[in-house]
Amino acid sequence: MAKINHSNLAGAGDSGASVAQQFGRPTRTRYWVVFFAITLAVVTYIDRVSMSQAAPFVAADLKLTKVQIGWAFSAFAFAYALFEIPGGWLGDWLGPRRVLMRIVLWWSFFTAATGWAWNHTSLVVTRFVFGAGEAGCFPNLAKSFTTWLLPHERVRATGLMWLAARWAGAFTPLLVLWLIRTLSWRMAFQIFGVLGVIWACFFWHWYRDKPSEHWGVSRAEVELLREGEETAAGHGDVPWRRFLASKTVWMLWLQYFSVSYGWSFYITWLPTYIREGRGQTVGNAALLAVLPLFFGGIGSFVGGFSLDRLSGWVNGPRAARKFMAALGCAGAGALLICSVHIHAALAGMVIIGLASFCNDLALAPAWAACMDVGGKYTGSLSGSMNMMGNLGGAVAPVMVGYLLTWTHQNWAVPFYVAGGIYFLGSIAWMTLDPVTPLDTQPADH
Image 1 (tube, rainbow, N blue to C red):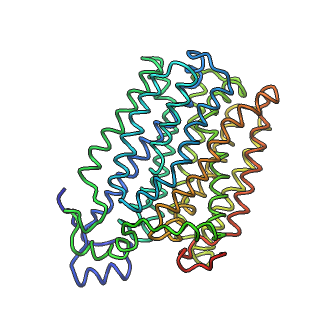
Image 2: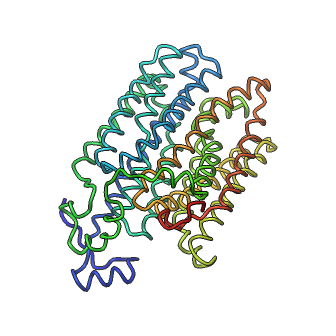
Image 3: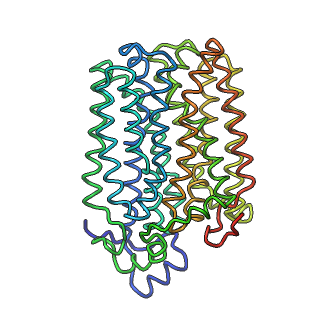
């Protein structure tokens, strides 16, 4: 790719001006990393959310109960959680290029293989292996942000990435429903599997683990990114004992478990809830299912692009991240509980959408904390955080299945449970330090 020259470096500050004086105007090739992250997030959430919309058709075809469908949802999340740390660690050791290539090709194959399931066991096994393959995707994207972007650019890039992921998930139900009605649920999964292969081909050709190795990066841009490239250099010596001794790390894990537990409902049981709990048709359910992920995308964008400004109002990034994320968790819990008492379907779904908006306010602070606290261990730390999050996402779907069975289809109970878990996330944010690098924190910090 040819160099992309621009007349200035917006937002680079004093370091950008200094580099420009010594080496000329930097290129902006690094922003293509954000493009690849956004497109991969889109593909990822299309593949994830498709199962929630296809679930009634899969259940009818394979004659599955709600508990069995819950285990199919959870199989993906359990495997994803189990392999998150290895996936993030491999990114720290080998670099994101090779690891992401393996991840995307693996999950693309097993997305297609979901359409080949013939009974409950084959479905659960396929979804488990699918989750194992996709694990490490977002930690490796965080690793690439640490290497390729300036500190103030990373939070905004994270906000854009999650906006794309949420909106891809928001509109996937409509696409899945159209494909199922036009072809079949089996063929829909096979079509979605092709998307990842296309992405992987372009990514492998363009991406390099270090900006200095890329043909489109000028000397000035290399110098601008020098600190990030050195900090994120490949290694395998992750200080796991220091992770376990850090209160900040434990609280990062707890808050992400909390937000992922509540949020997983939107990509698993939501279409079923809208049909059974709200009495809507399949078509209306697909339309209403757009709202939580659509609002969530806006929350991701607001969180990513307002943190810097909020930092100026509340005495720095530490207070800004804690305030935004704690407020987001508490708001998500309160709104989710309130939605139970709204009888009109549309109004109730709007309230759930606002809960999703609050949920996603916590994403940018959480991933920014991993990049700042983790430093050269960003892949491993974000992988461990995402592992804990996906444990929450794994427990939630099967727990909903059991709660519905035990309470004779009382949909209010899962909402109250999720709301309470959100409040735990808010408390966790009040007690952690989201900016101090792990290398400089006291062992019990």
